Amino acid sequence: MDPEVQAHLPLHPRDHLILLALASGPMHGYGIIKEITRDSGGTVAMDPANLYRSIKRLRRSGLVREAEEVEEEPPSERRRYYSTTRLGDRVVRAEAERLAGLTVVARRRRLV
Image (cartoon, rainbow, N blue to C red; front, side):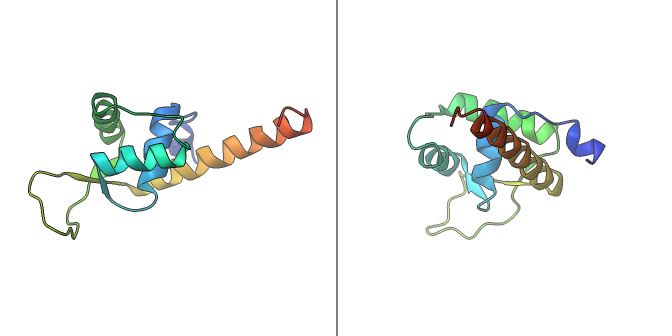
């Protein structure tokens, strides 16, 4: 595995959920929160403070960036959109593969 990717693993569950949401494309904060709620079947409710603190950390880590241009109807100057970087894409994919491997182990042990 690429050492640059491996340095970010394992991801904190909150960070993984954010990166999974952004895998659908650029989103603003409220859109990310809605996507996380949908992806988790309503079991994870992320509040804006934790979301933006996590996004700030993910940006510093080079996994997320502010999206440059996003078409929005109606346009809003207040919303900031975020997207994954190439490294972020590779990291979220590697984390998904890591978790899939653990799920195989759980199934083998009849936990799932």
